[in-house]
Length: 436
Image (cartoon, rainbow, N blue to C red; front, side, top):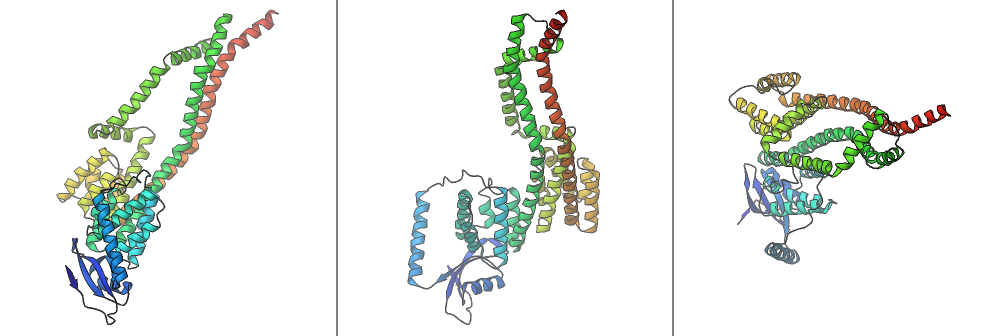
């Protein structure tokens, strides 16, 4: 059922418009509008307080025939129930950031949501993501809200997307909320990249050490052992130790490898059980050397996400629930849920966080100051930036220290094995020389 809106002074073009009222985001309706062009029609709808989904020009028979054919094709596709098999390629964080920025820019320029999705879809190189955006556009054109459609793809869009988009649609600030999403994901991606980069080279060195030791103990040492036994040579204590380790590893290699694989599988399986994963998460925070930096990463995720949500207009209790999930640590998430219950009862956020003794006192004190000054989101951003610098400094120093230590360890262990194999030969040649 179409409703008519007052036409423009130049009633030369009619447009069929799909819109929603900002205070009723779940109810879409169709309007027929007269305007000189598409941009003018869109602006008129925005001025009247509508959220614009789509604006289509009406008129020519060719256009009408094309619309009929497209509707028939759409119906036949829906009836066929075809399933796309393009979702094998993962949608990266970088692609989601670009998607949010582009969509925000287009919406700020006054382009309707449906048209903006169509423009962004054409520029996406990832075919699986392009299909996702195509499906988003299709379902939005059928009357679904943007945030409800996003919830159909939880493996593509993070939890924060659905909530901020819902706030944006409800308040009429969808472009600003998309911009906040892009800023948050950019910051989260940077800290994740810093952590991964810091441990990449040490991880490669560790793998090289393990591979070299395994090769020496399984293939090289046994050959020397056979020679020593055949020659009945007297062996130093160091040589006997290395040969013993080699024999144990060689004779029990399959069993040892099986135990390692079983341990990895068991860890992966038990990590999916909430109660056990919470224990793992608590243990990692207490680990020497790496525990403090993991806590700082959790602080960054919590403060960054909470600040983003509050700035976008999300209520404090809902923001705490979402931010707790985004920390990606069940132990901390459970503590934040208990804090949220106290905040619901009228307690201060900073005071309750400090009472739980999970987070650093510096963080909880600044949150308290932010609450008292009415600038909580600003202080949360300051905390996130401060701890990002702390983590960056720690990882830089750790990388600088670990690289030479690993190289010394690698050289020392391999050198010990090599020397232990040549000691009997050196001793024999020395005794032979003395005896001669």
